[in-house]
Length: 235
Image 1 (tube, helix red, strand yellow):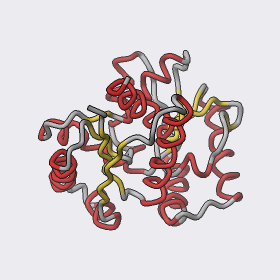
Image 2 (spheres, rainbow, N blue to C red):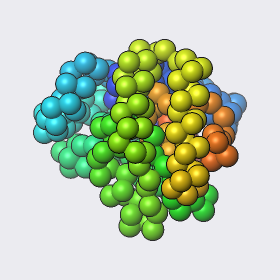
Image 3 (cartoon, rainbow, N blue to C red):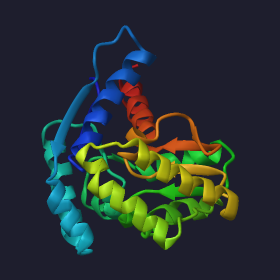
Image 4 (tube, one colour):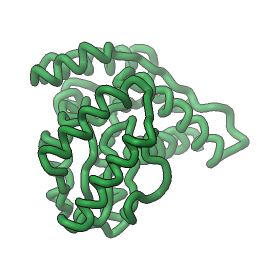
C-alpha cells in the first residue's frame, strides 16, 4: 500500500506551499514514472501559534499540534512532519503523545551538517528558535557547536522574519542585511556553515552558499527525508 505523508502546516502558509511544491518536484525527479505522492495537509492558525510561542505557552502548543497529528492519523497518514522549525520546540512532547511516526527537521538537519564535515554552523531563525535549546540539544551530542548571532542581530533577523517573511514578502535589502550578519559570524566567530532554521528563510536566501558558507536549507533537507520515506514504502 502506498505511503501517505501528513503535514502539519500553516506556520506560515508560504512555507507550507513551498513544502508541497518541493515534495512534488523531488518525488518526480527521483522517479519520473511514478504518480504524484499522496499528501495530507492540516493547517494551524498562524497568529495563535505566534501568541503561544510569545507567551511560552508550550504545553498548549504541544496539545494543539498533537491534536493535528492525530487528525492526520485518523485521515490515513502513514507518518507525519511539522513544516515549522519553531513548532519543533515542542517536537518531543508531540511525538510522545502521538502514535503516528514523525520526522524531525532538526535531527534531519543535524545528520546533513555532520555528513558535510561542518563543525560550527551558525543558526538563523526566529528568536523562538535561536534562543531555544532546540538545535544545541540535538547537535551537541553529535559533536557540533551551534553558533548564535549576537542579541542585536537576532533581534534584526526576527523583526524582518515576522514583519516580512511570514507575510510572503522577500526584499533584496533584507537579504543583504542577513548576508552581512552571516559574513560577520564567519569572520568573527569562525562559523563554517549556515543553517536556515526557519522554513521561510530558504525563500529569501536562494542558492548553495552565502558569504562563502554552505547553506543547510532545513526545508529542503526535511523534504528529502519525507520523499525517501514515501519512496521506500512504495519501492
